[in-house]
Amino acid sequence: MKARFIPLLIMGLVVGCHPANKLKKSNKDDLAEPLNVLHEIKDKTAGSKIVFLTFEITETDSTKEAYNFRLINKIFSNGTLKKSPFPSIPAYEQNHFYCELSSADNQRIGLIKTDDPLNRVFEFPGEEKDLGKQVIRRPSGQFTIRFQFDKNIKFLSIFKLSNNNPKLLKKIYYAAL
Image (cartoon, rainbow, N blue to C red; front, top):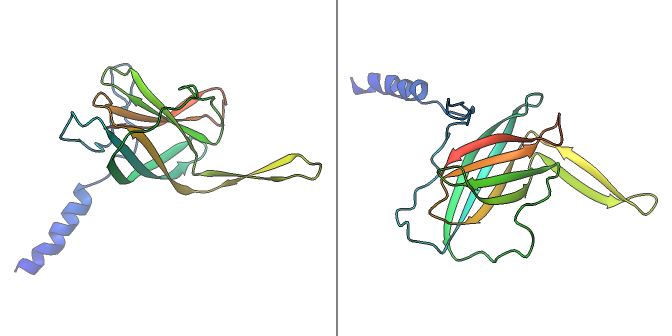
């Protein structure tokens, strides 16, 4: 008798659980709602922690620049990141992602530049002693961001330069931390 209900239970779980992988718009300031709760550190006084978040990204529509993100690993490690001597706002470039960490009132706390895992750039010596570049496009890939834990960080937004307008940063992911 119990064996008859197991397939129904499994089907109910599969049908009832679906990922929210599309950005939803809220009425307040036209901001996207958080998609995932990545992690809550119970000890909010723990200031010397480094957070590593590894994502898998898959392109779902190249013309609309739509992507599916999945958090595949998160690590909280003891330690402190060294302060960078470079400016905190990087120059915006193609083939990179820009991960913004923000507070509850949408104030930027940090900005992290990382390589776009869907566009691998290979440089090689050219014919006339110049540097040649080739971009290899992939349908999916993984990337890791790291940042110093701060109790004021509430949201993570990931941006990239738009393919249609290279002067426009396009938000491709938004999540609550």
